[in-house]
Length: 400
Length: 101
Image 1 (tube, chains in turn orange, cyan):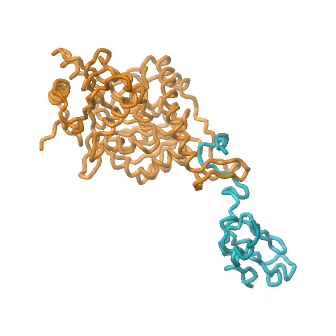
Image 2 (tube, one colour; image 1 turned 180 degrees about the vertical axis):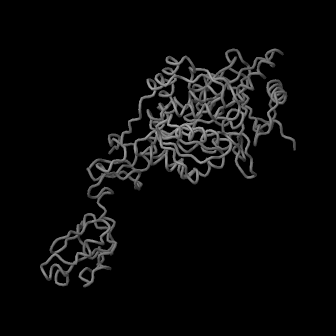
Image 3 (tube, one colour; image 1 turned 90 degrees about the vertical axis):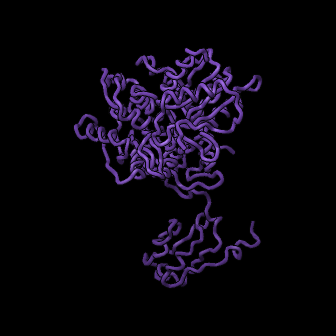
C-alpha cells in the first residue's frame, strides 16, 4: 500500500512490520517523531512490544543490550549528542554481538548546539564495530529497517540505519508499505544463540585475560584478541550476507538490488561524484546539468559504509579520471572519512592502471543550505580545473 | 593451540570451578589453617564456618575441618582476616613452594 508520510514514520512502520519486541528510546530532535510514533503504535496495541521510556540515551541502548541478551528483537533510535552519549554502550553492543537495530537520524553535534543535519554524529561512531547503512529516501528507510533486522540477526552484529535529519525525517514522500505477511516471510522471528535463562545461568562478556584460557568445561576459550578478530572476520563476511539478503528482498518486493551502493550514469563517466544519504539524489540533478554541457559526470551513492565494500567501490570508480567526494562530516585535521576510505580503496585496487585523482569537499555542516548552483559550481570546477593542491579539501557554502 | 572451535564469538562463562583457569597461580600469600585453633575442628561440630562464608571464590569447604582448594585460592586473605580464632594465617607462597617446580 502506498502512503504519503514522513521519513520518521517510514522508520516507525519498518520497526512495526519487523515485529520488534523491545523498544527503548529517549527523544531527541530530529528523531523525536519516530519514537513518538512507535510509542503510539505500541500503546494502541498494534505492535506486541515493550516500549520502555528511559532517562537517557545511554540507558536506552543499555535496555536494548539487556533485551537482546534475553533473546528479544530490540530497537532504538537517536541523533547527534544522544548518539554520543550512548558511545560506551555502542562499543559494548558490538563486542557482545547483539543484533540490535538503531536508526540514527543524522544531526550535527555540539558545541555549538545545532539541531540541523550533517553526518558528523554517525561518522564519529564509524569504528565501534557496528554495521552502518546510509539511505537516501523514505522507501529506503522502511525497507532498510526490515532488511537490517534480518542482516543483524544473521551475522550477529548491530546495525545503524542512518538517514538525514529534517531532509528525510521531517519531509513527506510517497512510499510503499509492504504487507505484514510478506515481511513475516522475509524476516522470521529472532532465535538467539543464547538467551538469558535462569535454568541455564551464564556470565556474559566477562573479563578476558590477554591470553586464551581453558574454561570451566575444559574448552579452550578465546582471549580478548580472538573475540575482536571474530568481529572483524564476521564484519567482512557481512558483505556477502548483505548482498544475498538484498537479492532476496528484491525477489520478494521488487525494490533495491544493490546492498553496497547506487550508481547513476557511471558507466561512461570521466568524473564521479561520491556521497551518502539524500545529498546523492541532489547530486544527480547536478550531474544531469553537467552532462547537458558535455561533461560526463556520474554519481555514486554509498549505502553500506561499514563493512566497507572497498574492492567493489574501487571497481566501480577506477575507470574514471577524477573522483569528487562530497561529505557532511570531517575528520578534523585531515579530511572527510569517506574521502580517505575511497582513496584507500583505490590505492589497493589500481595497481596496474592509472588511479583516478580523488578530491574531497565538505558541505552542509550544521544544516548549512546546499544550493544546487553551489554544488554545480563546485562539481564543474572539480571536473575542469587541474588539481593544484590534492590534499586540500574544498568547502562548499562557506561564508567566512 | 586454537580457539576456533570454542563455539562462542564472545566471552561466555558458565558456572563451574575455575572458569578463569587455575587461579591458584596468582597467589602470593597462602592461607594455612591450624586445626588446633579452628572452632569446628576443635569441637568436632558444624559450627562457625565464617571462612567458608566469606571466601569470595567458594574454595573453602564447609567440612570438619574446612579445607582450602589451593588450585583456585588467589590468596586474598579474607578468610584469615575474618577467622575469629586466628586459625588461618597467611604465609609467603614462596616459602611453601621453595624447591618445588
